[in-house]
Length: 144
Image (tube, rainbow, N blue to C red; front, side):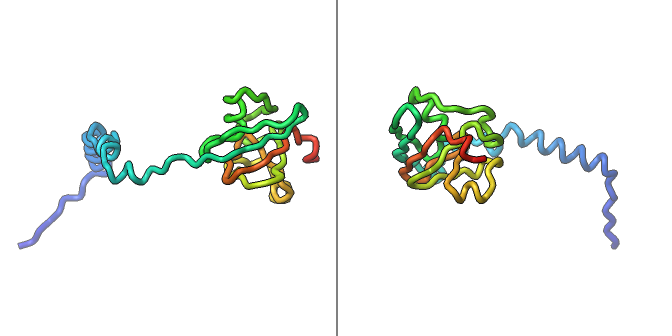
């Protein structure tokens, strides 16, 4: 006996795949409800780490508590502290500051070069605290 497998038309094969995906799209596997109700998954979600951030600007110093998953600029605004900004995407220098103590993660930014970051400059719109830190704000002119 010889077994022959008919070769499927690529269009028909794609339509079958689309039909299968559509069938599964409404299932719990795609909605996340199974994962959300899982005790194992819930135990892997760590609460945000809080850090003390001190902002030094021309008006004086401000202290705020900032989670490690919140941008420093966003937390400052939430606490009623007005800081300069423009793009809110790390693609300009309007919100530039300088870290004088502690550390931040500004990997979401694209404007500052390695030398500027090495000198402590930070864009507060894309900077997450990674430790207690002090940031001098209003430093855009010092970049150039």
